[in-house]
Length: 168
Image (cartoon, rainbow, N blue to C red; front, side, top):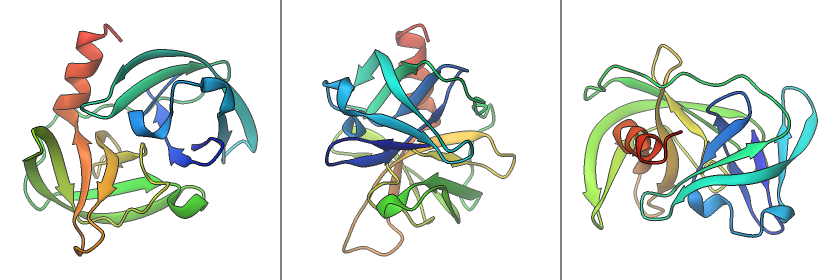
């Protein structure tokens, strides 16, 4: 889904029927300025409340009034060369899917990130990274502009730790 703020766009996905997970940098603390746009329903919703946020790992979970279909978190480890699929709204284009390969996990400025080659652009942030079974293995975060296929996401273990610490 597309998350649209005053001057920002991003992506997110349903964690449960009424909760959405995204990157912390996609939403700020004034939640009234955001619209959640469902491309598959042509519907809009507002953020009801922020449930939890981790600015270091760049994860946020919030509740909305509209329900949706949650994505399943993977319970298998990624291996180098596994195929991944990134879904997001790059440059405001809705629900773009790109394919790439998983290249491992790295500490970047003290934060664990997964690296993958599926293209992402501004607006992809917060969207899911899926394995071949359609299960979530990460969340799109950023790419290195001067690099080629150097795209990064929040890895599944960071997502699970965040959810466990916040009892979500």
